[in-house]
Image 1 (tube, one colour):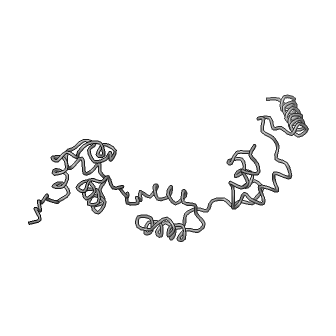
Image 2 (tube, rainbow, N blue to C red):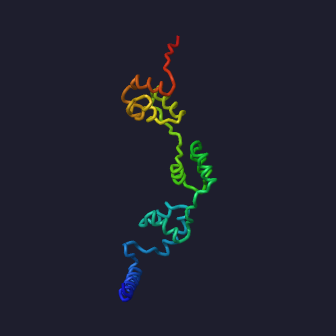
Image 3 (tube, rainbow, N blue to C red):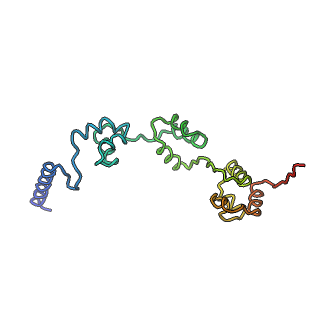
Length: 195
């Protein structure tokens, strides 16, 4: 590449920048940020991105976040400290969501969930009741044993019977599937005639 070509490229770039400044539109078609928009971003963006987006509907949320970082109103995300990771490992499986928010006031819930997922942490799954006492008891026992319904079905050698509660509403629970699952979880069926 010779110097004449480099100088011609630099002159073209300068002309394009001046033209974009005059038109108020960047080469990619996006509008330049105005002083009024910057003031809105400075006022709302660090704490309330939805309010900033409401006042700037022609800007995407991602653009508002990027502008906030460029203006210096948002601080970059801090890396996780060892003590925070230990606290997350301790609280995540057992704490309620308000307790998690109180334990990590500087983090949003989504960031906590992403970090917990990377660490392999899981919260216990709360199964909704299906109205069948045996199935509800089975699910409660599986939660106590920290098992998924897929695990229960693998032990009981049933296929999709307990994982899909909408199927249980429409048809009666197959007695042999329920009996096998109860035995797989270490239980036994008893009949109480109430005499």
